[in-house]
Length: 236
Image (cartoon, rainbow, N blue to C red; front, side, top):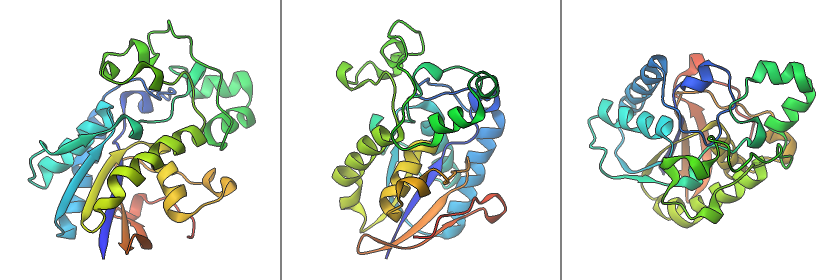
């Protein structure tokens, strides 16, 4: 038996402002840092040895992981960063306020943008300062890999490919991954074998570790460590 722990980053500055963030590299709020430290305390209580640590390129996930590791007294120099674990790119919605967009486009269309399987927003202009091409964090990523927009399917394809090629082979030991709402949703779709309708209903809370127990790479159990802040997990 082994464990895969998935943690969505703590509250970010743009979570607080209700803005579509995607690939914009914003940091944690003070509350987000507290959520990350609380995640570390919850993981520490498991009293298990964690051997591998993964994060996206984005500082809200990376700093969440660093705060967790500091809390459980593990050096953070073994973190593997992967852009494939980044949040979904929200295209032309990037930077816009979610409530304002609901008023402009209607709740149904915004829900479709946010939750549908293969319906991406329009592309973000490549001259926009929020485009990954213009964000220093991504300077070492091949230019042709930087998206203009993404659907959840696009996110799923890159997340699951990275998981299958890099993480899965290490599942004989315990693994911790810090990522984002949509990249974790994508991975849950794969791990729990959810259909396209079911995945639209899955919500991942910030700063609450999801403990997945596996046996021979098959999911046996999944639960949030902070039951008071848990969202419903779709049955698998």
